[in-house]
Image (cartoon, rainbow, N blue to C red):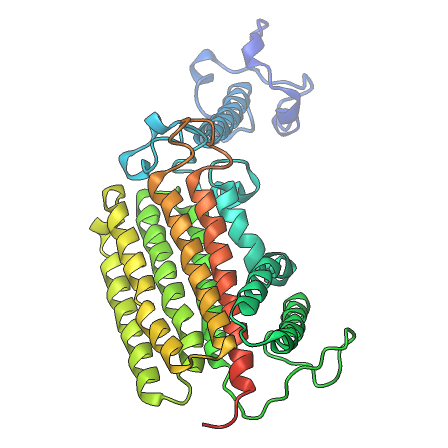
Length: 408
């Protein structure tokens, strides 16, 4: 009979989890002693069950995995920190007067979820997201001042004696209330077929006028707002995504400018097919050239900021020629003059917004004070939305006027 050693080392005792397997063939003692030369041999090579050393190694492995997981979480938390302007890579340095609250190369999931965080792009995203998700909720609030402006402009163009002016004032009041109802009830393309609750009878359609130019404008405006919102949200993920999304943003602006021409030009030159096709083709070609130019990677950097603004302004002011032509062609038509007044207001609002965008006011006056709210790009967005709504009001006026006209 083989005599076992009476000395039992603590490291040689099988723990409770491995005893059931070790008890088989271990005798009545309930534990097995091993020679020192087999202590460091893995259990799977000896054909034995779980040993204390292997159990300790597994425990250390699990602890190291937990440690690595915690380190990874801490590293991701470090990556989600806001950076200051000095710590940004060169491709993200655009406005040196905004000093803090930058997101830089965050993971894609965290970049998406940052829409619910407060940083220097939050208002740039949400001012557009709100209008995209439910444009009719703020439509009446924004359009009412434009309709009031149009009413004043309409009254100022009325001539003749006192009875004529009183009749024109009554007509303008009815038109003002009618357009406000259209904006409030979000029925741009439907007119009242019966007397409304306010006693205003809408004009009946004497000729079928296509409505697709209006949808072209709406589609272009929604594309611009959507592209801009997504760009401000995701451009901070990486250098490649920054280059892609900012070019997408510029493309959306060009698309909105081109689509804005379709509605007024189509209805103003509805009976002049040559001029209508000429103007729409010209602005479309100019827009395609502008988009191709803006897609060049070298023009997306900060030093070409003024060049991009000049290109957008040239595309916008190309509408002066058809506007003057329409004014001469329909001189004396108060509705056309009113629509042109809205277009002038749109250009004025766009110009003010671009002025803030280029001059970087007010953050230039006090760097760091407008990092989260009130900086120039947010003000630029507000004026762009206001200009688009002014154009929307002008398009509604000229669409209603064209529907009330007789056949060509």
